[in-house]
Length: 140
Image 1 (tube, one colour):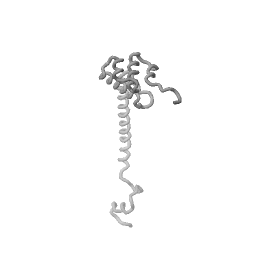
Image 2: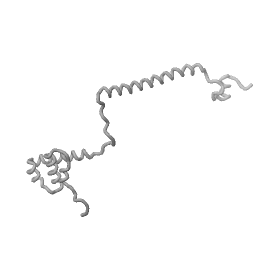
Image 3: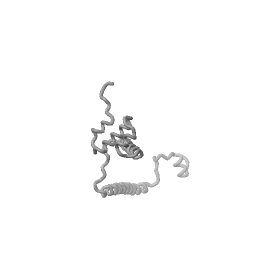
Image 4: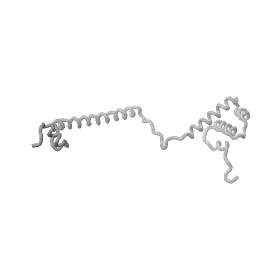
């Protein structure tokens, strides 16, 4: 076999953490690799088989959770003061309220001009026949 010798449970020594936790993890990995039997691991750790299986399950679940994909980038930091989030929500509500008020003002300014313009006059797209019918007459 070419290349480096694969690092198995011995890789745990390079990790940072308490020595007793590293020892437990190494034993669990050795049982998964098949180099240590569960009964031997239980004797070395001083736990029952049920507790060993529980430890192994917790270690594997933590590893799986740590390898789950996450959204890229840094997680959004929570505001230092909880009032900041409330103020931001209030600011957004006020911005929307202002926009609605400005829209209502524009409508109020345009409507009187439309009312003063009166009914549609010639050249508004109404045909000659329709105008005559409305006026009640025929061609002179």
